[in-house]
Image (cartoon, rainbow, N blue to C red; front, side):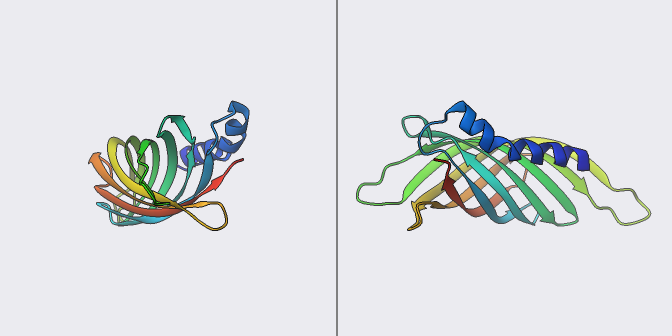
Length: 164
C-alpha cells in the first residue's frame, strides 16, 4: 500500500513539469483541496490540476485525494472533466462534470484479525463553482456524488493557482 501511495504521489509531483512541457492551454492551474466524504465518513485532503479549456468551456481536472477516518485510509485518483457555464454579470463560474475514480482502500481491522486492502472503481457526478480571488487565484467549491464502489458524497473546497 505504501509503495502504491509513493508512486501516485511522485506522479502528481511531476504534473507541473509535464504541464509545462505539454504547452497546456491558458488557464491551466494547480492547487490544494480539502473537505469530507460520506460512506466512508472521512476527512479528505488532496490536490488538483486543471488543464484550462481543452475545448470551449470544457476542462480536464484530475485530482488526488487522501481520506482519513472510519477505520480506513482511502487514496482516490479521480480523472474528472468539467463543463463550465458563463453567468452573465457574475464572476462566479459554475460547472457540471463527470469523472472516473480509482480508490485504493486500506481498512484497519481490530486484533486478532489482519488489516485488509482493496481497489475499487466508480464514477463521480460533479457540481461545483469557481470564483476569482484578489490575488489572481481561484477559490472552488465542489460536490461529488459517487456512483459505484466509491464514497457516496464528497463536499470539497480548494484553490486553483495559475501555472502561467
